[in-house]
Amino acid sequence: MISIIGAGPVGSYLAYLLASQGREVHVYEEHSEIGLPVHCTGIVTSKFADIIEPDDSFVVNTIDKVRLFSPNNSFVELKLGKNYVLDRAKLDQKLAKGAERADAEFHLSHRFVDFKEGKLIVEHDGKLHSKKTDVLVGADGPLSPVAKSAGMFNNRRFFQGIQARARLENDNAVEFFLRPGGFSWIVPESKNIARVGSLDWENPNPPFERLLESRLGPGYKDSVIEYQGGMIPLHNPKVQTAKDSIFLVGDAATMVKPTTGGGIVQGLLGAEALADALINRRDYRELWRAKIGRELKTALFLRRILDGFTDKDYNLLIKGMGTKGMREALETYDRDSLSGLLPRLAAEALKQPRFIFLARHLLKRNLYI
Image (cartoon, rainbow, N blue to C red; front, side):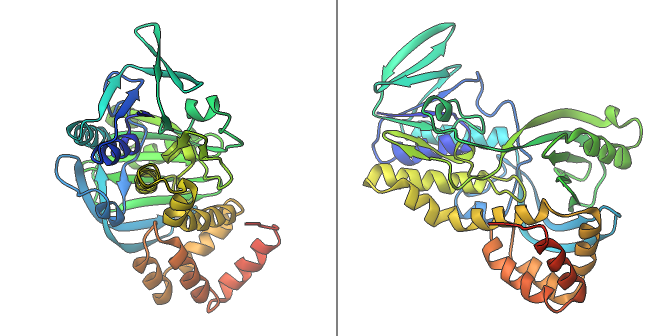
């Protein structure tokens, strides 16, 4: 028997992959309703469609344009490949139903407590229940109780994120506002509703409130439909993802892009790697690293560079992105293909004196991989 803790998209997709191959799968979710509460901006690149077929049951918008803003409010506008804005609750529920049709069994309002000597201990209705299981999977988010219980949590860093769904007129372009220590965003759901958020190493609230007030005015709270928030793990390639019969996947394994905090595509690909490992008795760590390891490491390298940026650096960066070569590179590779993008950007940067200055400036900070 395989027990999966967490009925998010990664846990449910993994349950489907395993159950459809005849494995006995049980999924334990601490909340009473799958998909809630929401802790995700829910925008994904076209690579999502290579894994899950998008449909109107959970896709609320498609976007093909982005604006990147610097601290001095200058910006560059770029074309995107098709990006999907998802209703995360409905996506989670759809994937769970697919897993149930494949005979996976879901247990709601069941909170993971511990795993000892092959026995899973969960709490339900105030009572502890013990069940024998052959494999335990932690798909239980950034603070993963499974990882902590198994001694696999290791050293982790987290971004803090906050988001509001708000009534905001827009032209269906994603907007990112770059700054030292993090960034903010506006992601349209429709022509008059958008997800406005901020992510930061320290406190995301001040830039979040400034963005809301600048776009919605001093009475912005009247336009807010709901608030959401959560912690986002920084990818750590040294985090242990397998130990005896215990495995971590998705946010629990820090399979999250360090550049943007997005992890839906990476988590789903991690689930495919784990299903392959369990079904075919292969090495899980080798499989997930082959699928997503290079891109995550590249994004981690870029995050370390960005963490050294000042306002002046960001202003210089955005100013330089308007050249033909830079635009072509940025429009050719999406956020999930940084290993292809960075060499192109480096080649273009060498053609611009302003970027040579920036490279020297960054090297003085003793950046490391």
